[in-house]
Length: 177
Length: 188
Image: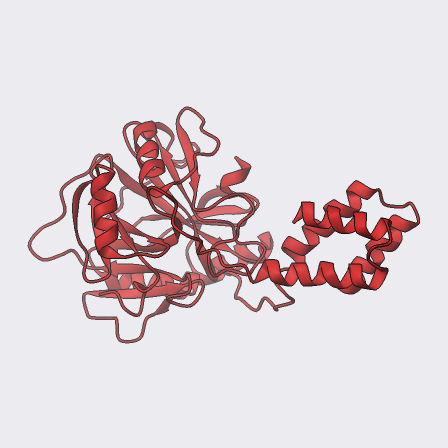
């Protein structure tokens, strides 16, 4: 994009495009950029990840975790997918268009998965339009106490003491480490 | 957008803005502020927009991170000697399906256990567990994915219903792979 705009500035300076055309072209470029599809072709080896599809959360009574995530973080239970043993809780873009979900579920009958040396110690939601005072007040109003963190990146414990973080783009961004 | 560009151009023409500053400003505007349109943000204060990150703790983060780089082409950012961030996309990209400017790419944080959480807080024992997570990949086809995973040396690949596969990662943690067609309205 930067190279394209630099070329356009050069054309403007040399008189190849007039002022009106320059402005229209930049605006059009922005529109085209926005319409770009992130689902590009697969790389030569391995896969191109588009995002987190879902997180599978197992606990003694899935309804307690389900209700917490719905009431506190605004997740929505997928219609027809609350089976009495699990629920799919949607958030983000529409299902099938980049949306994610959390499966809250009761332990599987007949045993558990092989134990791994690795584990997920917490996960973090991104909140939009972060306002520190408003976020803290909203959480207080919902009930859970903020269990830690810093401005822009906070934690709460869910009904099973599982650590859930919620943050803004400034404090939790892979490229700003 | 056009009004904004006209103003910046005027600043440039009158010497208030350098050529470089003009290009940078217009590039930024075209790729962020105006690229999303003027869609109103009507979300509730605490409404989750997306997964920001998943914090994955393991005995030694490097081989686990290398595994995710090899299988899922995830870059490793900001390795600290005890952890690394692995964004699901490249710098400057937006998360798939997201138009908002303040929602970053989701990422894995793969870390050693000594400083889980990146701070001094200690976590209480939880009765809940994340038993697996699933990644959405582009152009998912189960047969092709199985062949690709096999070629990559991935262990314990097994079906996860008609639209996905499960596998063991470097530490035997259960990771699922699927396409966009596996979602909240089709899974389970």
